[in-house]
Length: 259
Image (cartoon, rainbow, N blue to C red; front, side):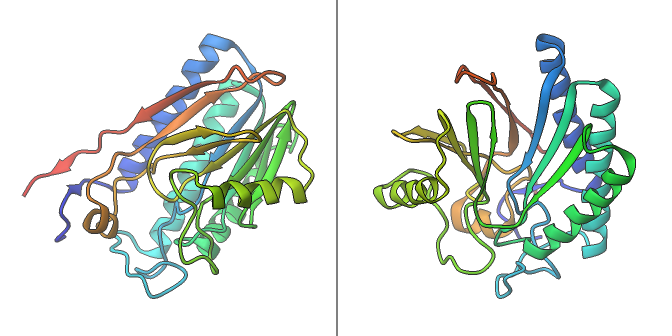
């Protein structure tokens, strides 16, 4: 209530949006056939707070579900998505990668994803589905000629300001420091982040830099500070040994509540 731009959003709507993700993956499967690996990345802040605040504290967030309701929704919907994808045999292996070091959800996200991991490990062999919980601010994973550096974009403790939408020299040097420290030598390095709820893509010498949008409509805090925002998700089809990536953005039109 009292927000500038009001949208309908609930557990049922969240589940409906996740079914759109499933349908988008199925579309790519029908085009390309069975994938060697399907990566499902969550770049943080899915739970968007604890007791009406960020998990850092001191930043109020209006929420329409209790902590327990959020937990149930996030776990149940993710398990349902995984079950559906395994049943559809879209990939030889599914890897769920979840960033938990984020300024809004942090330990709550860690709890949710540990629950998902425990359930999935009981249901499937790790050769079929694997859950990776990323607890550091930045973590990297390699497949073929590609390395992904995954982050929310603003950490759970230290950062006053998160990483920007548009690259600057400071951020380029910061990311290059990470690449050099961990001696990442992959032909293609992809830095992927959330946080700012906006799409953006840039490429520099060592890496490309991609911002992803929020899956949810904008929060009251975001609306009052930055205005209205779009929501959705992205699908990428990535050849193992080349950089001929196809990237598609899917926008979710959440129903407006007009005063």
